[in-house]
Image 1 (cartoon, one colour):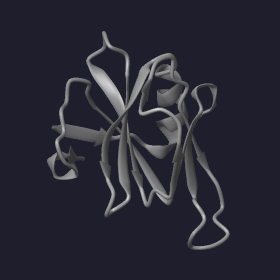
Image 2 (cartoon, one colour):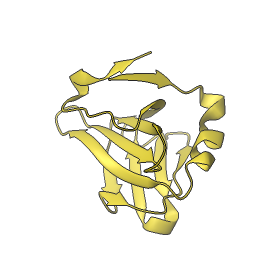
Image 3 (tube, one colour):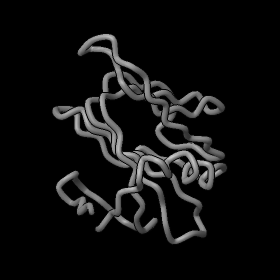
Image 4 (cartoon, helix red, strand yellow):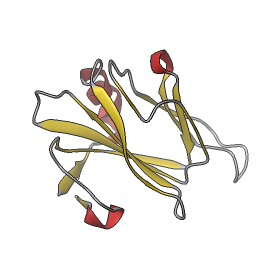
Length: 120
């Protein structure tokens, strides 16, 4: 399935539009430390997908309702420190990673592996 990258300047607005949506860990690859988080409203055709690379720490549920996702960029003090946090403070979700890209795509997309992703 095809995903379209969301410009960095639009991330906060797109995530605010998804407030109250469902959130799910959609894919994870332990070797490459990649995680794909899907954020969607069940009755809408489009979803936001957060692709996190270089994941180092995760706390919280694997899927939840009433999400309030935010992406926080920090200045990493060293190579082992996270540069980004994907957070949902109200639901106890925290993910640290070295890089994040947000995409938009069909909510009914089904990916079995990261190789199934086609991104623009």
